[in-house]
Amino acid sequence: MKIIGIGKNYVTDKNEIADLKDGHQLIFLKADSTLVTDNKDVVYPSDITNQIVYEVELVAKIGKVGKNISEADAPSYISEIAVGMDFTAKDILTDNRDKKWPWALGKGFDGASPVSAFKPIANFPKLNDINFDLKINGKQIQVGNTDFMIYNFAEIIAYVSKYMTLNPGDLIFTGTPADGIGMIEKGDHLQASIEGELLLDFKMI
Image (cartoon, rainbow, N blue to C red):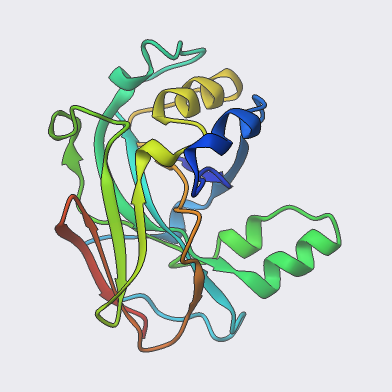
């Protein structure tokens, strides 16, 4: 099972999309040990970082094997959708970027990918119009709609499958809303919803 992340994939103004869509998507991989399910609390890894950035994202689960998938066929490869958090150790990532090293440690630490229960793709007839949001300690922090994606679900799947075979169970974190990203603290309570339904609910401990 692979966890695939998509970076810098949302805008605040849809008029910006055409200029930003240059065919090059920012792709990174996260270790499967980053995954946290069943709304379990996440241990803040204070032994390695004190700067964790939160990003709420929709997560697409791949349902069948695919390679060189066309954009037209790509939606049929999604079996389910969830909401998740892409945590980043900002201090580690910044240091690695400065050294021109990979992102693996800044994105791949244990607990960096909490994911909610999945909903069948049939629940989402319009992939380009899905609302999701994040509340921290009861306050709404991020709000997103998939119509503001630079690269939509189909474009992501088609692009990634040119480079690597997608297998059943692979997860794609499809990007976070352009506004509201910030630091998470130990003790914070995170709640993420899709279309108003609370699906992800945990604390940093």
